[in-house]
Length: 316
Image (cartoon, rainbow, N blue to C red):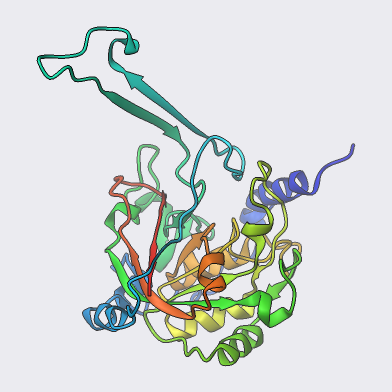
């Protein structure tokens, strides 16, 4: 039987999840508890008033970039995620207008997976051996009608310094081929060549040209360039709040070790407490030669949500 690369990726993910119970126990120091045992925010603790003031000083032109893509029924999504919108028009649009002002109206209902389109991954998205960020057991996190802990509704507003690294310029290819991993060395070199110093509390965006190259494609491409293991450890050491990319999974696929299942997700969300931003629109920033900007994000207050559909703003 012939399987597509996407089917193989999905199959490997399922088998990897089933195999977790047979893997050796995690080291006692796997979970980084730098903010105390009761912490639920991770590196969002670095979102200080000082960072907000620093970010505000970066606004010179007043130009606003929307980093979120349009989400709809044709948006490529990791299966079985789907999107559906239903618009309700009173009286089916054929009845008499209401009152002396002759009002008509529309309402809408959205039936959707939250992890679709441009999104933020919260700490309840990925765990290790039934434990989540800060060594929190699944019994304290998971509930079928909304997370008990780590719901994205509880996130603070993000107003901080954002930086974008043009990895197409670093590797000399646009778009970057699937399987291209951004190592610690790559990130250091790209930042140095762009004159960027990544600091604690920053949001880092990684541009690969992937989104622009796949514009209009209704099928999710199974492989992608992205953040590698050493790159994830390095950015965590610098204290970044969130890492985003113009790809659907942020990390490199296939993984550097093909037997591992989304290892960067595990490191960022479970181990370090760093948020993941997927499907970020970065090409306009890169085209304008942007390197740093004010990053702003208010996460929807959907109680107990694992993820959130988002439209962050970059302001220069």
